Length: 165
Ligand SMILES: Cc1cc2nc3c(=O)[nH]c(=O)nc-3n(C[C@H](O)[C@H](O)[C@H](O)COP(=O)(O)O)c2cc1C
Image (cartoon, rainbow, N blue to C red):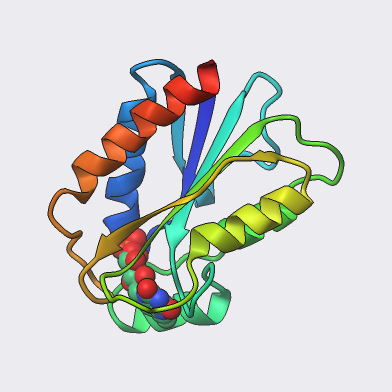
């Protein structure tokens, strides 16, 4: 099985989770891990599962304005995020499995998650979607809540197992 993991990260937390997910997946799959700025314009034909992760911004995936706000708070500036990447994929069927994850702040009852929005968008693009997962950070900058990197690795490992069946 071949997996493509595409992530977006302003303060580095989602990047750490993406790396852990890729490590977990790599126990049963051949994995390519890439920042969204270096992601291919279409999913390569030999890829079986696309895993997409990004930070939750204003209850959903980032937009240019929220990335600029993140940059004002010391984060990386990126021209495009996972929303733009998914929107830019060529129209037509995408036979691959699709799974999203996100990071979001560790506050109960805060609605919305980037991974849920990404999953809805991927379904519209014709992917076969699997339930998304959220990983928690403290505040806008992080760090990640203790244990989240390990949980991400295990989630990736189980995902690989589940999708290979
Ligand atoms: C403009 C902006 C809006 C945000 N809105 C939310 C939000 O609605 N819900 C939430 O849980 N976290 C929100 N956050 C916190 C981000 O989820 C957090 O910065 C992110 O998970 C850190 O990941 P990163 O280090 O990969 O950028 C927001 C952050 C920024 C910069």
